Image (cartoon, rainbow, N blue to C red):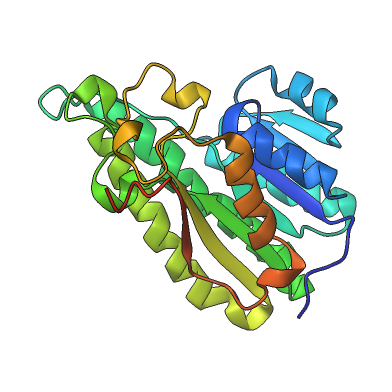
Length: 248
């Protein structure tokens, strides 16, 4: 079933700043009606700046509140066409110093919230519509076990890398489950991107085939394709936006 023409109704989590804000802005520019979800109070300012329809301040690890918000957006607008899960946290502790608190925070934010946000988007709205686009923002850390130098402070941590690997495989699992309903589910895996999460890290970009940091706008471009009308035969895939980091 073809993706609906604009204005589509889209939700982007983790969209107050960085990659999430760039994705939301790109969707707004494409004519979509976009609702931003983020823990940061500045999400309302971002929504106003980019011309989004609404902003909801919430913690995605509060699963009942997250699911209620997603379903209410679909109820309010009469449909839910696009979900982009971008909310994330990234601890940088060494494995020796890794705490249970960091593990739980990164896994709950990057993996658990992604799973239950997808569930809330599919049931009931996308299934009932027999159409939908879901994109989960993972990381090449989930492919190579963390990116950056071997120094723990400059490398994405074990919990983050594990959760992002889980998100990649979660995406594949859901894609197999919902394809008959006209729903596609894909992953975008950024590498070193100049964003608040990457601030201060040494990613050794001089060793990459494309020897620079990427931009949030470049990640947003990949998402725009995956939620757009030309991607109807693409599901379960993981698109690397990483300057060749998985090759280095």
